[in-house]
Length: 331
Image 1 (spheres, one colour):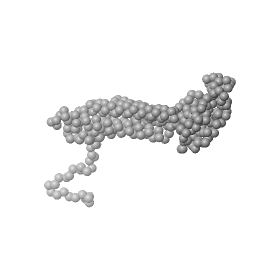
Image 2 (cartoon, rainbow, N blue to C red; image 1 turned 180 degrees about the horizontal axis):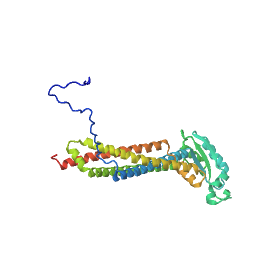
Image 3 (cartoon, one colour; image 1 turned 135 degrees about the horizontal axis):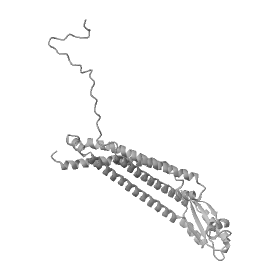
């Protein structure tokens, strides 16, 4: 008795081979054009990491100097100083009171403060020693004027009025210091940007050499693929993908180490606030915190270096293939 699912064969017919149930041969995995791991690739990751680390440090240093210069500028712009030099027959205390009164009469002056004898002695103590009697020396006396930054007073008119009533008085609005500070900050930023551009240029050159080295090492494979019909876009895409991952690995590692360094410096500054070294560093660079803008800049540098690595490898491959075609015009 035959199975109900089987059908009788017609005379002269041959049974069909059982192809459907046969296992399909295993598909061979396509090897990448660019080797995944080699010595040159690991060296390139290390070079990109070092370049990214130095670029992030440069950006952080520029950010610290710029922010510190902005703080210094704001602090200096908030005050002015009236200096009264001693002279024969001059009542210094009355002259100080008159200078404070004249300055207070101008719109834009918040307050005035006379630096008393004790404070003047403390200012001179590092140079002239303690227990100094300022009456024995021709020491100028000071009046501190607090300025409204939003609407500063007319310094020219104040200077003219002081000169007419107190010939030995002089007004310093700290404009020269502010101009020098702004010039220093701009110079520092310019130098930092120039160093950053040089580092990015060095990174581009390293990627160009690495790409050409990878293509030279796999030149026979690339030539066969290219001359059997593989488009330059396909080959360039393979290289771009490989070097994008390489750039991301190196840039992420360098950026992470730079962030750790900034956090460590900020932590050290906060833990050593009472030491003279920390006081000097804090006076120059704040608390070594680059802020959210600085960390955003680190992320931006990581992305820029990764994208620059991929784009550089892409254009290098396209130029290499164009050069190859020019050497073999018959193909």
